[in-house]
Length: 568
Image 1 (cartoon, rainbow, N blue to C red):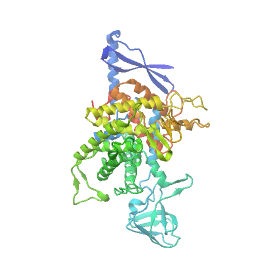
Image 2 (tube, rainbow, N blue to C red):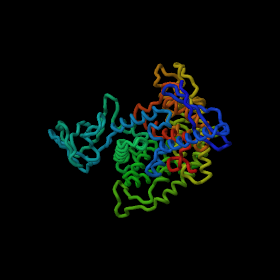
Image 3 (cartoon, helix red, strand yellow):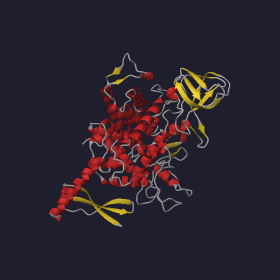
Image 4 (cartoon, rainbow, N blue to C red):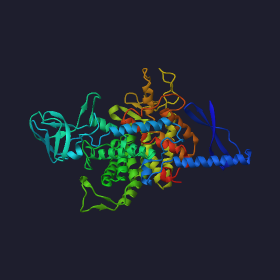
């Protein structure tokens, strides 16, 4: 065992110098406090050496913190350490983020599967398909990534869908198939680019939406700012623009109907970053959607005795309203129905819209979320279609905490700050005390502890209202260690809250809790198991949309308000 003494910080408080010993066991490390030393115990040369070390570390910390192009981007992405920073004691976090961010970026389509606009015509023994009111250039991609997105096309005769492949697109109204059309003639038929891949037992539209569920564009922007690799910037832009052109937004025209996404699936943070990155035409749709979503899910339900649905949906509605309250421009173009309205052109009331959003989110934070938080720090709700009552799903709390943290940074109202501070700190204590299975031994693999959140906690079912009073989750592994990783994946959304609780309180108990949960997810000296960040797009995005903030906030001395730290 090799011991390495490292000065962490010097403080004038009570004349105490804080020193720690970093214990390295192979590739694993942990930091433990050593006895405190009074500066009087040190000679002049030793004091000078300590001061030099503290100065060097402070400079390193400042260098290792991501610097963003502007404070709006910093607000959305949050405080982050640069990739492979020496201040990150969990290297698997960085290596996995980079490796699978690259893989998902390559596999993501520029043009997602969708029902095509307009109608198509196909002729027997011809490779040419023509369109009426179609947008082939923006809705069909013959060169997309296999197996899901590489030129699939289905044309319906009204009774049967015939699947073919597209070789090239000549214009919005003409494309060429890879082989001749061998079926009956099609006149004014409907078409889509859906495809079922038998090897993966999945439809490409399900695969696409699942991959984008926790906002892949947001994560790829974070990857870019952490690494400086321009490939990640290209991936982020591609993914945001693909979502914009998907049938779920359809270039800013979907306002209702079956394709209209609920808050959990909107992935608007990535679109806001893209709007700041050369696509100002997104702002009009984003404002109208965020405003209507907030009003529907939160404002009209302000005085209800329970959450409207669950804290995930309500939390995302609050999150996007808080973000726009900071980043909506003073001026932006009107693109209603996806087209620039040249007659009225530019709106100039961005500032009052931001102020209204801020006032509304402040009110909802205190009088809805704050009012409904239980004395034990939990939130509870009913899930009628699952027959679950008075129950919390702990991972969803972390999703609401994203908005609470951002609003705590943004608001200047002391009462709102106090309420949010109370919500965040009580939620973190509750999650660690009640919902985290940190010491629970895995029954059929006693060499492991679960070290993850319960899936349900604190209530029960309509048949047994107390069934989950002490938590409900996987009881055993059936010999599969992956079940432990699956439980630990439920930590993914809560890490950041512990880091922020530490920043705003300076209470090292939150650092202790946070390091335990983060280490369970990303590797520490306890065991070799981690979470499921590498499994697929949904798991990856769930892991990396906010967890990186913990790494920056746990080194709280480097913070500034413009880089995702609270206002001083």
